[in-house]
Length: 386
Ligand SMILES: [Zn+2]
Image 1 (cartoon, rainbow, N blue to C red):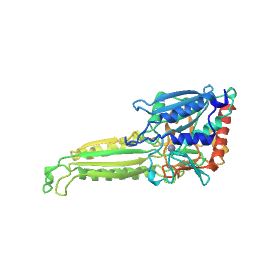
Image 2: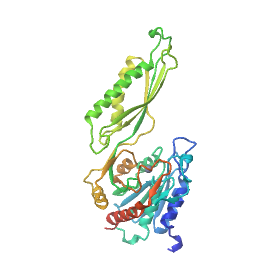
Image 3: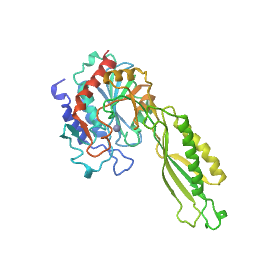
Image 4: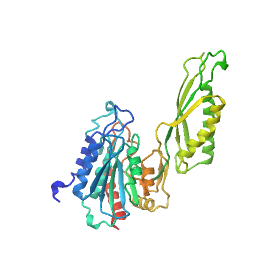
């Protein structure tokens, strides 16, 4: 291997990754391919001895996952991140979001902390690693579409890849280990009845009144869940249900024919999303039947399950020891449930703060760079070399 083949210095890698736009969004006018980021990572990882596999996400042209593997064996460690970023509003940025800008001991740019920057640090930690010394494989996993559909991670879980024993997701946690987050569900409820003149209620079936009854049921369900489920590790210790928006009817003197409600639900670890949907259905179906309203209840997106790795898991213990922090819970969701589904002990732990993610002037504090590289090196040592 020649020097020329080696990946560039960490700042240069960071600058390159930031310069390659990879916004993902449910809005087609924002959505972009992540292929350039994945190709770049693969180009850097191959000279380090990694076998690289680029896997298209089924049904999503231009969206790809990367599985880069160094060494062989049944166990091993996955260092995982997403290659996409959220959309941005350039008017609120002090510098070009696609040009790495160093000021105030920070690297500014879209994706510096959430989380293309993580890959630069992970590759830095791998540089100089002697592949022949690996007892277990090291896998760098780079996913598509975390910020929108999570379909990159879903596709991996579906394909049963990659397999390893441990996974670290480098989302910005200020280098504190995270072993729990809530799930996210966004649901849509529609009632359809019959319009008619308001002077005679018998002329129609009022969807808005049906929705009123449904919302009462939803709030009662919420109260039940909140009394049954509580986890003191979370800032908001109970599961939440938010009635987010409602559209129905068109006139005060017309019986409302159609009403649509969107709500979100944040289940705690231990709550099953399908069971929650069933519980809702069972409460609402009789109510719709009674009022002769057609009802449709469907997810607005597939949802992110809640995530928890037990506090006594080996990876949790190791990360607590290496960072000096107890593993905590966070309020944001990650790809962890899918990596866990693949059979891996999973933790979320990475440089940068979630406070700067999804914000104009996103940055990574330079003070996080060396500690992150060191921590990743220690994890590789512990789970691949010992
Ligand atoms: Zn992220």
